[in-house]
Amino acid sequence: MSPAIFLSDADVRKVARLARLAMSEAEIDSARAQLSGIFGLIAEMQAVDTQNIAPMSHAQEVPQRLREDVVTEANQRELFQSIAPQVEVGLYLVPQVIE
Amino acid sequence: MLDSSLQQLGSALRARQISSVELTQLYLDRIASLNPKLNAFITVQPELSLAQAREADTRLASGKADTLTGIPIAQKDIFCAKGWRTTCGSKMLENFISPYDAHVIGLFNKAGAVNLGKTNMDEFAMGSSNETSHYGPVKNPWDPARVPGGSSGGTAAAVAARLCAAATGTDTGGSIRQPAALCGISGLKPTYGVCSRYGMIAFASSLDQAGPMARSAEDLALLLNTMAGFDERDSTSLPRDKEDYARDLNKPLNGLRIGLPKEFFAEGLSSDVARAVEAAIAEYQKLGASVVEISLPNSKLSVPVYYVLAPAEASSNLSRFDGVRYGYRAPEYGDLTDMYEKSRAQGFGAEVKRRIMIGTYVLSHGYYDAYYLQAQKIRRLIAQDFTEAFKQCDVIMGPTSPSTAFKLGEKGDDPVQMYLSDIYTIAVNLAGLPGMSIPCGFGENNMPVGLQIVGNYFDEARMLNSAHQYQLATDWHNRAPNGI
Image 1 (cartoon, one colour):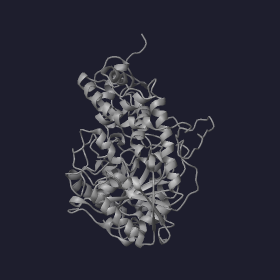
Image 2 (cartoon, each protein chain N blue to C red; image 1 turned 45 degrees about the vertical axis):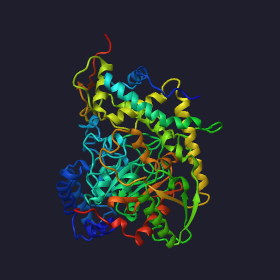
Image 3 (spheres, chains in turn cyan, brown; image 1 turned 135 degrees about the horizontal axis):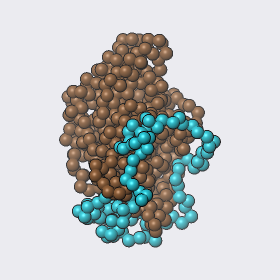
Image 4 (cartoon, rainbow over the protein chains, first blue to last red; image 1 turned 90 degrees about the vertical axis):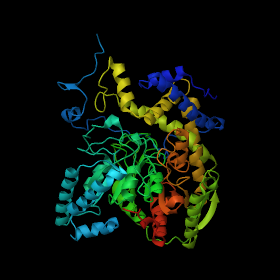
């Protein structure tokens, strides 16, 4: 069940792409070395027998609460947009995505 | 005044022996003179603090004061506070002025406490030495060549150096307890779900928990009384009746059963730390407690499990930083994807990027079962160890950190060595249990040693009782660094 610990430059490049992190060739090289070390540490986990053990996500085993589907927040567009990198006429500006 | 407890400060304020403005100014002056050396604060906004102090003085004059009214409390820079720059130690949020209050901040405001400023921290709380902060490392007040611990290192240094009456921290894998130990102060991570995570910038949501950091257990109890409570805006906040965490402080310790995990006193523990912790246990026995050896056989797996779960959750949480609605945006970019990639590459520091990469990898196609699911299963085994242990004891004690504060730069190049410095604290987060650290002596180079106390779920009052009785019998918590 244990996947290979060795990471290639291509693996690192793929992960950086998924994580939306621009990386130079030098950064990819050092990331590969450090991540391999960390995955060496993580690999200790693989030898543990966890058959019939349920995964644990919350210590108290409480179900997610639901609430009524109603508006609870006031509109604060101006306040929220005052900290945005770029806005125009109440809209967030990003590079054009549709031709 | 600087060595007064919160109770004493509150009494002096209510008796009008000192005003909140005077007290706030006293601390602001200390910050102005000592912060250049310690770098414990990222942001101080005296006009905001003094405005709150003036309001507190009005409230004090009207006789409607609460326990903490008028007391200057520093806030870890992970808590959003309306009108305050909130950076989370990152370049990504260098210019982020929070438009709202975290739930915990709201509770302090309601109590009339004064926000004294935002304390330095590892970037997005990812670190054990405060060296990953974009705003420079914090220096340990006991020796400025050494780290204060992390990630709540600014808070720990500020409390130790008497730059605030008390402060807040957050703890995902030890970020309250480890810096508390390394700076010789007291810190408490409550049971997961006791303090709301709303407005606390998320690192690993299933582990993150806010808590108080102060000079004594008595102060921690008063702070927790203000910070704890159900909040519907946090989906994992626990609905529970309000409790007085100070209610058991004065109970004697006769009959207290202390569990000592044999795994926490094994290889890897520095002898100076072991000596101080063993002396503390002996003191507890003098106070009427008994000791039983316990075993937490799966705790050795907590570091690898943590370094799957926390980065996985972090990679998801930090995907919100896209340079669109708030935060850093790269000055030059091509298309939208390029804007995301450059903004994130330039806005995040090396450790944060490393953890995002780990998290993205373990959650990526084909690896989920082998890493994330396997880690969640072992998490249950780790939690079950504690459940078994608490059948034999009331509290668990041991070292908080395997060594005293290390030198700045000492572990900088080796993330794995840095990760191992949280070996005794991480299991507690994985199980969701409350844990605390109190000063219990000094090790080599006269650096503070922390005693970790772990309680069963919702047993904070008993832990605080254990810590307070020890602090009545010893004076480690009253020691202050030289020149402070």
